[in-house]
Length: 105
Length: 146
Image 1 (cartoon, chains in turn cyan, yellow):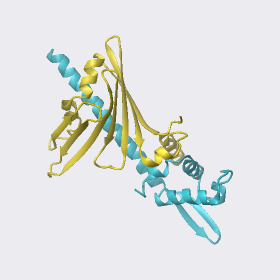
Image 2 (image 1 turned 135 degrees about the horizontal axis):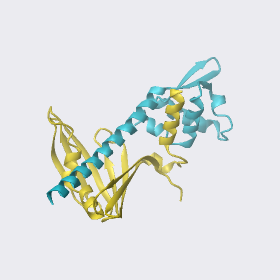
Image 3 (image 1 turned 30 degrees about the vertical axis):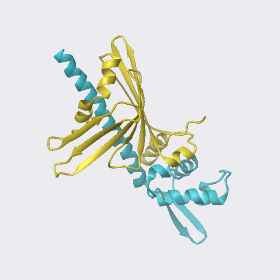
Image 4 (image 1 turned 180 degrees about the vertical axis):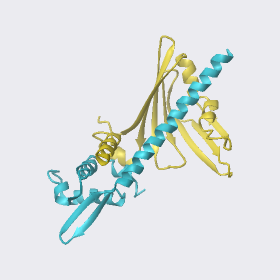
């Protein structure tokens, strides 16, 4: 799935980009400074983040400014919480079952 | 070898029962049926457990409108009553496959279950994981809220 924030955050370099952007919008140069990787590599990772809707790019002449899209991240975070609630439900079901067995015996 | 999977969540709970009892509850079709029983109008027509390595867990929930949602698990490791590993997929997010590792530790008549749940996907297996994206998301949530 191309627009998947989970996939977008599956690489440490992309997480670094997102973290730097959490302080506010910045240019591509500012965000990827000292990464020590090639421009094509950075472009590829930025493309993944943009496709996932996690990062948006505004082109102003020769300056490309990147910004975070908080909604996409909130969705990813919300999904993790829903997973926790689901599995907690299984822990509850195990507890109820054990309680009933103990009462019967 | 580096840890290549990203950690998603960890849940721990202690039950007043032996490790065998708790393990058997975790692998019982009755418990799975109760787990997925979302509400009065919903039913769970199928809850099947084939408890062997490579065997599957299958749960079908029927919505009030008659539509079905299906959940799938596959047993990867079974060491009764200490350890259980499953791969799991929920119908609402089929591309997300979760690896669920459960440990059962009995002490003084009570058993503590620890679940560690990680996401399995092709990309994540290829790409190195230096730290979990869950931690990353939490940091971000704080940054965005602040």
